[in-house]
Amino acid sequence: MGKPTYTFTTPIYYVNASPHLGTAYTTTAADTVARYQRMNGCDVGFVTGMDEHGQKVADTAAAHGMDPQAWCDSMEPAFRDAWDLLNITYTDFVRTTEDRQARSVQKFWGDLYDKGYLYKGAYEGWYCVHEETYYAESDLEKNEDGVFVCPDCKRPVQKAGGEENWFFKLSEFEDKLLEYYDTHPDFIRPEIRKNEVVSFVKSGLKDLSISRSTFDWGVPLPFDEGHVAYVWADALLAYITGIGYADPERPGEFEARWPMQYHFVGKDIIRFHCVIWPAMLMAAGLPLPHTIFGHGFLLTKGEKMSKSKGNGVMPADLVKIFGVDAYRYYFMTDVRFGYDGDISMERMVQVYNADLANTWGNLASRVPGMNSKYFDGVVPEVPESAKGIVEANPLKEIADGLYEEYDACMARVDFTGAAQAVQKLAHRANLYIDETEPFRMAKDPAKRDELAAVLYNLLEAIRVIALYMAPFMPNTSAEVFKRLGLGDITEIEDIKAASAWGQLPAGNPVEKGEPLFPRLDIAETTL
Ligand code: MSP
Image 1: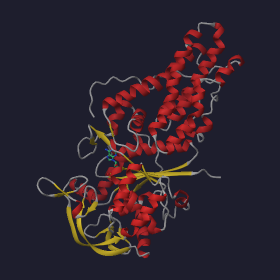
Image 2 (image 1 turned 90 degrees about the vertical axis):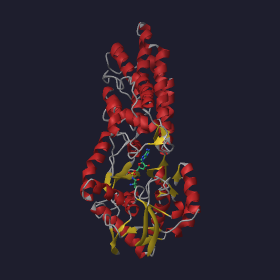
Image 3 (image 1 turned 30 degrees about the vertical axis):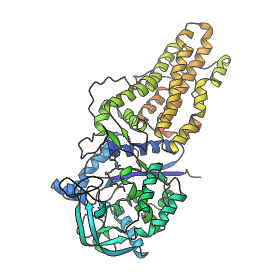
Image 4 (image 1 turned 45 degrees about the vertical axis):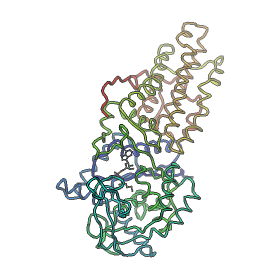
């Protein structure tokens, strides 16, 4: 039997700017899931990409004096490099200007046209280019100059009207959506997002304009070539393009991966994902994804971090200081996934020193150091007389329950909870050193057997911690495995079995190595 599939997406990002910490957040979270589910025996599909059509990108290209396609091409390295820097293991990277995406868009909307879900009409209303969203006049706000502005980003909106558009009969799905939310409690998470979506749908849905004819930077609709697909009517379909929808070169893949487990998105785009996208899928007769997870915002000094506000820090700026693993660990654990949270340099240094330098890093260097001194740098063979200490000890007790706790957290993308579960073992192991005092035992020849068992337990705890830290901090876990004389950690496909206590082979060479997380002392705070 093949492996079970586990498939999810990040948003595909607008290419008006390079990725900053906010956009990198979802991608890092998705990668943590990808790495864990691979270790948990799944065949992972992880789709990300670039959202290249629409007015925002066309305007940005024009502002740079470039043709939109040339502009988009020039932005691809910024995204690929950022994801490489952060060790992101996506399985597909969809660009909406690719032929395969045009094929998806044309097939999908062609089907909905054939099924009678589209009609031609005149749109009268407003449009915000920054949000790529239509607004009715009653939704708008006015700024101090009396100009209509977008209720979301507060920028002036454009009058859109007179233009003939194709409309999708979104209003027909009001009841069906409400019933679906009701009968599928995991469809929108966390709960606060669900409440927002439900009240939005209850307030009444209007049909949605899905095409533009005053503008040609997009995919032409197959039944009316003078119209290009509205950028969201294009972008959402990248999720299925990335798993082989309408792709003759990838037979069977879409069927194997759809419906997928998760769409990970920021809370600002949940209406597109929880209202428009499911209605589109219902109209197409396709099942809905299991969960749309709307995470919160990263804030700096209480404000949303964004490129346009000028507080958008680039991942590379922080990776230079902290290293990629500590970067991933900080963002995945300090702000609980699903909620807004403030990030700061002070806090990042604190977490780094407390969790990584003093706890996990300290354990991972202290124990091999002692082992070199007392057992010549090889995993000690535990004599019969001390076997009981390996079979029952406080570290094994925590390790034995770790898979269940960690797996339950990961399944609901509670990264903070998963990391805390692993850190419990690291803390306990540091305490175990204080309790057992190996340096004292080493002076007493009568305690030699006991010392072997204590060190074995500590080395084994390190092995187990490395396994469960790997989805967060892949490089350091690989390094720890190497130092314990173990094989390639990325080949592990059954973390539960691999983490069962007592598998570290006696006689393996143990390297001391450099500290994994040297303590940081940073006075200046630049975030
Ligand atoms: N192109 C659309 C998505 C189409 S998906 C079919 C888009 N792109 S975006 O480039 O604006 O990406 C935005 C993603 O980054 C959103 O999920 C948004 O929530 C996230 N973030 C941008 N700034 C953020 C923070 N400061 N904090 C957390 N996430 C933030 O929207």
